[in-house]
Image 1 (cartoon, rainbow, N blue to C red):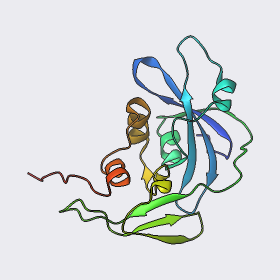
Image 2 (image 1 turned 90 degrees about the vertical axis):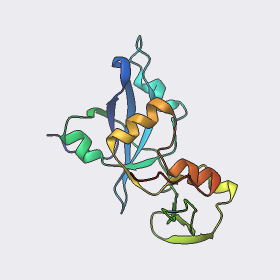
Image 3 (image 1 turned 45 degrees about the vertical axis):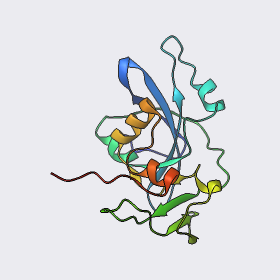
Image 4 (image 1 turned 135 degrees about the vertical axis):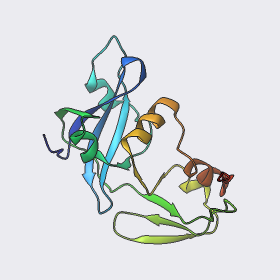
Length: 165
């Protein structure tokens, strides 16, 4: 099994036989940070074009090594990473019973900074500090939605709790 290296380009199989393309940007203290570049059109195989286009969403931390090891994703090449700064992430500990957000923090790759009880709009485009599973990344590529409850927390400072049966 080929161990992922910084700069590796990988395929993420999605529905209808299509492929999304991602790149391994850097190894953070929390795990591998990747960028999902886009979805290859069925009739094209131009990865270079995707490398120059706007990514589907900001960089995320994902279980990349497991995805490669379990043959869920496949390394197809390597290209030098042009990332300058470590991506910033937001974090929150919420109340499971009420769905209310607690105290927000910002992580810059080295330190956590207090933001407060409400997430200001300038931070809402940042990714939540969580290690995503390969399956949740595939779902996000296909739907464009941030998985529950993270998207609701970011946009509304709360979510509607799911009642346990």
